[in-house]
Amino acid sequence: MEEINNLISNKLWNQALDLLKEKLEANLDIPEKIKILNTMGFVNYQLGQYETALEICQSVLELDPKHAYGHKAMGTILAKIGKTTEGIKHLLTSIKLAPSFFDAYHDLALILIKNKRHAEAKKWAQRAYQLDPIRGEKLVKNFY
Image 1 (tube, rainbow, N blue to C red):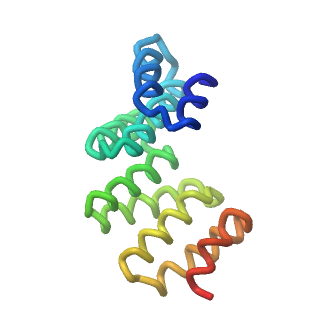
Image 2: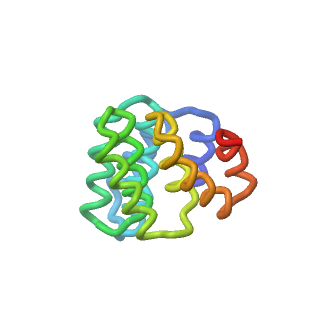
């Protein structure tokens, strides 16, 4: 995974995707398969291939319906393609499954801000800030 992470860090998305596809062909246990699929979903998202990323998230959730990152990713992608209500439901599921998962709060707040739902967004932004003041600071500045 180190080589793949380096490619991702350098935004070499297609090369990372090729290596991920190779890894996925190996005989993997479910946690390792989920890890590879999550990374593939992220890379596809970065490439703007939202439908493919969505299909990958669905695969993750079929393997583990209670996978918080899978729900977070699904929610973010759905919101990106205009299915905001459905996306918010997945983000709330992610938060319920992993109450200390910063990214779910952060993404939910951003989606609500983008949809001009500032009062709702503020509570999620504040919770994100409580979980990680460094990463959450920029988010809460939207409200002060």
